[in-house]
Length: 178
Image (cartoon, rainbow, N blue to C red; front, side, top):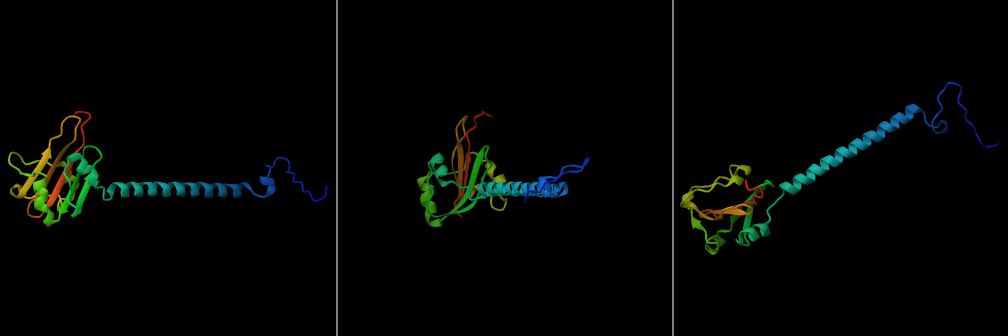
């Protein structure tokens, strides 16, 4: 049989792999490289997943349409997003700086009233940098709110009449009635 090479193993020896092309030590090295490449790819995918999640959840996050639909309070066109947070469980909070030119009309159109009976608690402020999320003295604040009821959304909007900073908190429905 011309042109054909036959490999025979010696008695008691292991047969060579792939017709003698690769040795066991070569296969182990290749296997390690495959496993390490796979683990590297998994690590990259995990890191990419967490970066994506953090960008999605930490991005602007302010959904103007949701706030307007939930509260029936329409924002003026000119505002600056100061901060926003959403804990995904019981509330979302946003702080906006409204253009001073729009402030009086916004207050009037949305029936903001002086805070008289109680000073509202805005739980979302604890999730925002304290330098930004500190409410000023109530003498310069006006409020519009709707208390949360079992299974329904509640919300509180407070506006600083000197700076036109608007604090908006929406409390998600409490389906568990806690």
